[in-house]
Image (cartoon, rainbow, N blue to C red; front, side, top):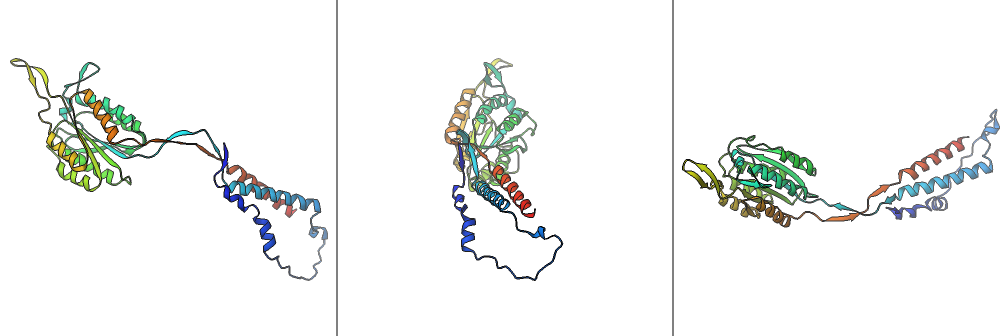
Length: 319
């Protein structure tokens, strides 16, 4: 569909006529007679030449006003997603994430592999959000800064390797780094999703101190404790049942979430992770898509034509 973005500018169309009627004429100064060898060079233009110049000038003015009104071509409506929240994913890659107490596709897999698989689907659904990724062990570092490029964040999460950040778990430093990155952004709706299977045993910042900084900065933290409650392993006295999540500090994770207005979730298996991600989609819904017609600006064409006709008028006037 063809339309004008600023149709009110067509009101300027009679401006030249109004100027001719209302503005006083230019006062011509009387000068002495000047003798020249070629009097024809100073002769007034012929009537038909003056008429063509006027026609071209009117056309140029019409095109100029048309360009100022911003002609546009609107394509059929397409869903456009408005900007959502800033969401930072903080993932534990300490050695304990190597425990293969979860199942994926009917096979036992370690915690990080299952987390990567389920989180990939979750990140795919976050249309309109700016996503970031923090990996932490004994140290925490930003693997992906906040970006709308979901595919890059998913790829970087898939490439995460256990042990690359050290052999301990610095939950407080991970939260502090996430809050720092989110506080520097201009978005008021900021969220951290922290996934870990252990307790804070490294780093310089205590988790509750970091959570207090998050609360003061308006950042919500949702915490997820991952790991099965029981695992059968072969021991000295035969097959034994152990708790592979004995080191998980659930009390701390609950406190961090509650202090910042978030929620704590417990993921004991793959199905739990899927339910948690569905719950997070409800707690932190993605922005709704709105139908906006893509616009193609057409003003350069009448503007170029107006400038070309103006140049022709000037050339004819000099001739």
